Image 1: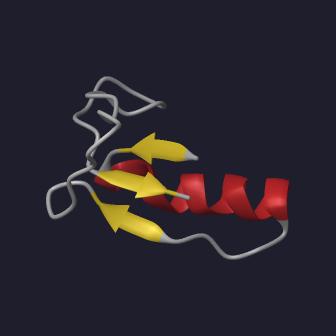
Image 2 (image 1 turned 180 degrees about the vertical axis):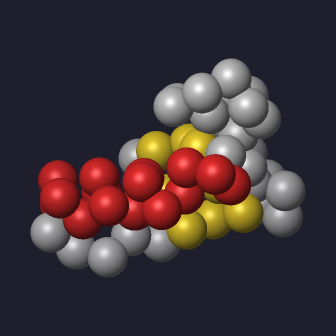
Image 3 (image 1 turned 60 degrees about the horizontal axis):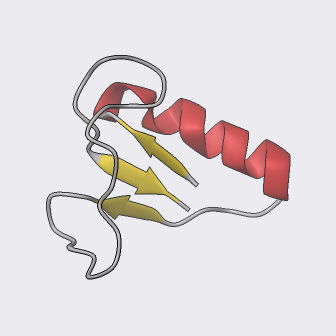
Length: 55
């Protein structure tokens, strides 16, 4: 699972495919709310705001 900004979505997809050998789902964090989990605020690759969950 990778939480990233728009700039790093492609990198996160590549890392997911390399690790799991399967296509990920990409979730827009602006449109999705989780009842039991608060996503990180920052991208895992930089200091930008996290916008997508690649899982």
